Image (tube, rainbow, N blue to C red):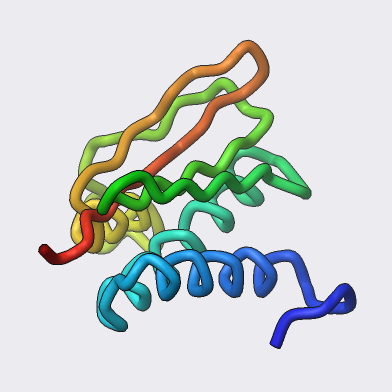
Length: 120
């Protein structure tokens, strides 16, 4: 249960779960979206140097779109990390969990987004 004392990451996850459940997404898709959301928020903290990233959730028809905004104009590195690298696999995880993802440069910073389509 989310309330005003709940940490922001948890609030974002609660809002995502609620929106997806109301739109009849299956539990596996909800779990995948939660994991992808957490990855984008952590990336915004770590690489975007943004304490409070903006999270946008949109369900249109049967597609969920989640966007996380940060203050950095640096675009994500899309190259695969070296075999033993200790980081750099987060967006590969997002790619594997979602149907589409991308980056939109903004006037200030960028939005990193992903989409999931509901099962027909």
